[in-house]
Amino acid sequence: MALKTSSCRLLFKFIHLGAVAPLAAQNALRSVLGWSSTRGYYNSGKPSYAGPGGAAHVRVVDLRSDTVTKPGPAMRQAMAEAEVGDDVMGEDPTVNELQKIAADMFGMEAALFVPSGTMSNLIAVMVHCRERGNEVIVGDLSHLHIYEQGGSAQLAGVHSTTVTTLPDGTFDLEQLESKIRHGYPDPHYPRSRLVCVENTHNIQGGRVLPLAFLQEVRALADRYGLSVHMDGARIMNAAVAQGVPPSAILQHTDTVSVCLSKGLGAPVGTVLAGPQDFISRAVRCRKALGGGMRQAGILAAAGKLSLQNMIERLEEDHRNAKMFAQALLDCNPNLFAVDLAAVETNILRFRLQDLSLSPREFCDRMAQVSKSEEAALGQGIQVLMYPHFGNSVRAVWHLGISPEDTQLAIQKMQFVVSQHVMENIRAQ
Image (cartoon, rainbow, N blue to C red; front, side):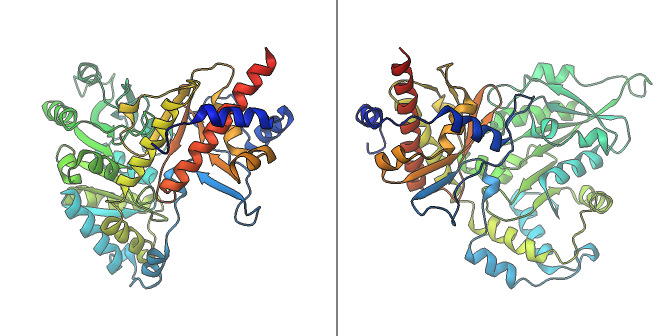
């Protein structure tokens, strides 16, 4: 196929061109990026690159996250024309319409528009765990546990206990059951109230939770009187990957948080959905956290368009991610470790098998452009991605990345491999 590596020819072309990135340039870029060896799951320093005002021959393929998407003309028009009112008073018609659309789509009684996924998850914990000293059970690699600053403890007074996140994003159910506290109101222990799951699973590479697993988690929670909340930031990716409506997934949960600002392309916003009584309490928590946004219909209009028009196109992101993953596997020499079966949605995690090229250095090189690259490829290609958890690299596809962009990213990857091979040859 066109994308399958003819990398042997490319490789020797690059070698003869002498395309080696100077070590000084690598060190300078590392300084600009602000990358360090401190504990983290991906580094959030923004790389420096030539944007629209830079050289016209440099093409940027931004795979750092699906949060970098920007609203297109139709979405901007919908925002400009949105009918608005005071949402804190419940009078913004566009917000009310978005909430009704979301609740119906998710199979829930009601929904609430909030500024962010982090706030939405925190509100869910606050409502489910109403007493300080209650406990939530979460995966040890979950977004709620890793990336949300411990807000459950910091702001809600809710204790967390963790279960081991398996490679597919699930838990061992026996371990989950062992984490449930018994004997309330024994004064020694917190009270278990909530189990949180994440779908798709971010750190584990966009993995989709099996419906059978969710059914078993729900049965276990029901047995002990616990609630189940889903951090469904990318649940639409899961629904598309499984070929089911989101309500088929969410029938196994009490509540869900769904981001509109990732693959769905809205600039801001998350929807929290659940029973009517839950949402009534969530409104109070949103207000306490500063999430009342008044004339929020301008933002809700974008979210409404996301739910109505942007779900089916997620399949393209999934195909592009698999296309790049296959190119990594086809690369000669075999530099990358990729589990193609685990590339289920728009997030790809892969490892480098050559210890002389670290994930950080690989990302540095993917973001650089040299004159020899421009000579070999006819243009400069900057591919932005992050070193990630478990000594891996993370790349995320989204509506800003076309199949053509993906092919360019593959070309750049092949070029970077050629540089590395040439350096090894010269070092011998």
